[in-house]
Amino acid sequence: MARVRGILETVLYCDDLDAAQRFYADVLGLETDADTSTLMRTFRVAPEQVLLVFDPSVSEPAGRDVPSHGTLGAGHVALLIGDDDLPAWRGRLAAHGVEIEREITWPQNGRRDRSIYVRDPGGNSVELVTGDIWDDSGA
Amino acid sequence: MARVRGILETVLYCDDLDAAQRFYADVLGLETDADTSTLMRTFRVAPEQVLLVFDPSVSEPAGRDVPSHGTLGAGHVALLIGDDDLPAWRGRLAAHGVEIEREITWPQNGRRDRSIYVRDPGGNSVELVTGDIWDDSGA
Image (cartoon, rainbow over all chains, first blue to last red; front, side, top):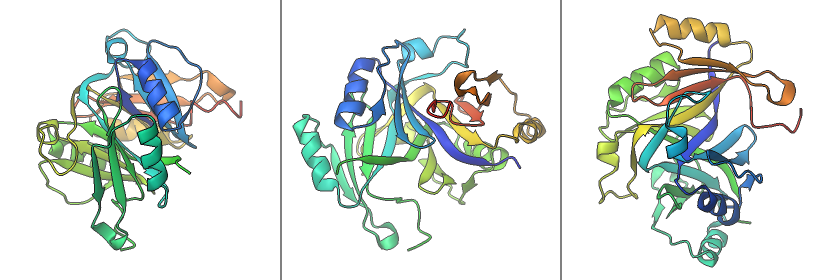
């Protein structure tokens, strides 16, 4: 049966891949390798879930082996964190000099999930959220 | 412990949300609701995994309750499909008049995973891939 069973690759763009690697690996703690490609960096988030960060000036031109893509402007991603880890995250972000742009408590589904929003070095809006705010099935 | 445990929201942009809804719901079969928002559409892909498609002309201006974001140009996402479902997918895409831009067999990790690439109505590169091509731990 033709059915999508998950999202393997989530993609953001940043024109400074070394800065992106420091942010996603050192600040957010995502697993990565020692890649120094000018095209992209790969971050393992979970089984069958990777975050890819591309330099759009390299990924966008036609003629690559794979279809070209690349964006300008601020993208967005939301990353799941533990319910009780907000204090630890605030501390880690502060220790790395990363400013929290916004904090929100979600009214949905009675769980009062919370989000912290920061910006990555490419200006992308990165949300750390304590639960699945789109799931109201268990409300 | 401050640890990221998954990607909740993967985001693409498209200036025609009705067309995006037809593509992701009717062609790719993702679960959605009857939302007619001018801001976004929400597609459930798996537990704790949603694909959000925003109209960047609405999501990008400052002054929203949440931090603004929005991109121009072609983004990318890779969606996991079943190993044996490529024939079914080719048939479904053809039935909807969606052209396959590229097919690739991946040399990594001995599994010979395959990808089909199409474009969504916003020009984003959407990959249907049969396995985790970034996992070489079990090669």
